Image (cartoon, rainbow over all chains, first blue to last red; front, side, top):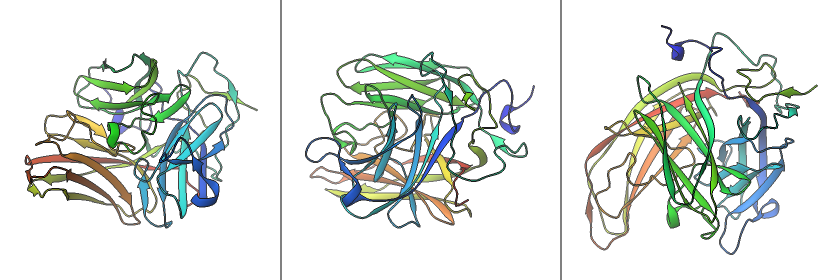
Length: 221
Length: 134
């Protein structure tokens, strides 16, 4: 039996595919606008060039030296046309590094896409390094204020991620907290998602919104 | 020429999250939070690679695990055992020498709040992301 966590990659398991990289600086005062009503976060958006949303992973900084994970001052999400950077800042500069990865199972279209990484590197794969393998991934539709468990049988608690439709057609990384969640700006229409990875399954919990929402999960080994 | 990516195991036309390292630390939580005040608990993972990116997981002693990225507030019933009506938030910072994880407990009540002593394990799955600065 091969321990797949110790080998570079296995043809049995897919890996995340990064299809776009955004890096740069933004001026909050001149380039951002409120995404909702009074007190809502400000947003800036950029076309990603695909016909479906992408998974986003953001780190950002206000000084270009110390970077924060998404979810602290800034957060990124996408729709079928744009990636969005949300910020709680009203002034200053945002230094951002944003990775966009492909969403398998988004729909049945399987479009032909042009991949633009936005950087110059000659080597994309190196078999000497290790890649995180996707043990299971899928999309599930969840009713308002519901929970469900994605079961699995593994030797240890795996890693995992989940994205969801905070609004229909917008794919956000899981975030929650109710009125204490700084990214919750529409108490009627916006949904929240959190997940817990346990020994025997991933628990998905969605709340808020007015209609059922899609949730995409990935379980890694 | 385009490429179809659905169902593709791996592709030489896309980048990848290279699993560069998985490093761990623990954060011990205890003490009493004064009324309308906070207590901060920090964990540091030394890592000499500037501007890397990581998936940071928090795990409780019962094995439950949450991904801290993008989840500023830690929900009840996940990895932190609440003593009362406090809030628990987490932020991860990257510098050129370390990844710092800070858990902040806020007590918004009029009385001080003794916390339930607990230890949270932190694991950072650090990637060599295809940023131009790396």
